[in-house]
Length: 163
Image (tube, rainbow, N blue to C red):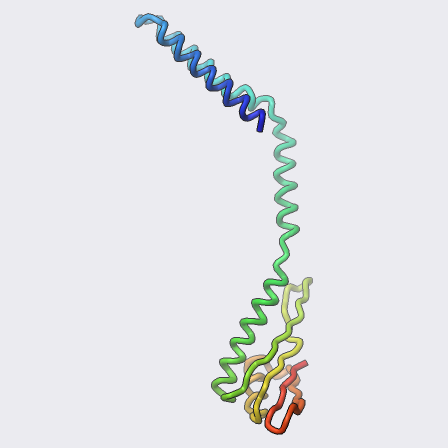
């Protein structure tokens, strides 16, 4: 930051000096050549610090920062939570149509980091006496390979667990 301030100060001083010299010049043909030299002086003053920069180090640091940033970005927790919420909403909509009064209590997913896929681990439903309709709705949404189990919670309540 200090180097940038120093460079800006040098550039301002060069511009002010060039302006002062230009004001002191007479309005003759020689002034165009001197104006050209003053303009070149300002450009050289502006570009001189760029020659001192270690461009290889700067490039290496920018690539290292890019690799560190991309390697440290892990959105798996967000993906799993978003998938659970989306599946819960879809399953609730399916239940509302086929087994009214049934409620999705919990959706649990397993995330495989290697393949990047989420798989259903467990879904808990409150079927309220509509076990067959809830089972059919869950299988339509999640597929036939999901095993549906019922655990009795009361006389009219049933919990559907898929494992």
